[in-house]
Image (cartoon, rainbow, N blue to C red):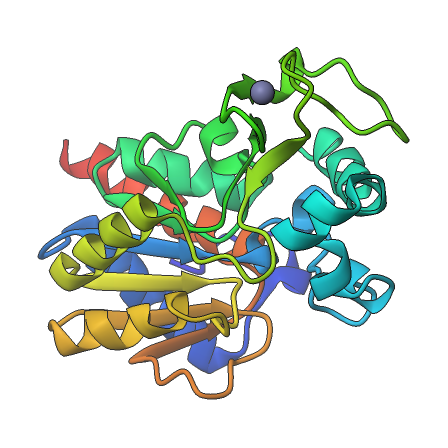
Length: 266
Ligand SMILES: [Zn+2]
């Protein structure tokens, strides 16, 4: 399946090439639900930086002081400095080939669900239907006072002002802020998918935040094979298969293989 590639720069290490071929074969005729877990690495090619990396925002902002609900209530203007910066990054972000490949694989029945740690909404925009947002979403905001929910597009405020509800309350993006647990419903859905998966794809994430970090173990204990697709292998993760390459390189090739096989057999 590697024949005919034009770009030698896209060649992966031999072990990763072999694992990629096995993944494509597994997804062509999956034995059960195929579940993808995505993290910051899946959106880097969309211009959304990995906030935990060296150049990340957390180097300039203390997450406890700048991105917790307590801080937002105590000093909304200060927290919105950071939130506006995130908003600006996400406003320019477009789905990349990794997002499009996952959407195409879902449409072909080769991926059942995407569990994402990214609040950027890019999986939805690429066309994925079953998306579980483990860290919430930046596409809606809620009022801290009355609980009203607004779409991002309905919020007219601009930096540096603090966006407020018609009731006067401070608005917050519906992302999981520092110190908050993941949305309960999302975690329950993710747990359910992982306990039923035959293949779990860990894509662009170090999975270092509990309780999301436990999902691969849960899947493995339930009989799933875990595939890691990361630029750098994650310490502490024990995948059955490892593809050491960026998601936007690996997933389009997997999708191409699966869709090609479908076309030939269909
Ligand atoms: Zn309100």
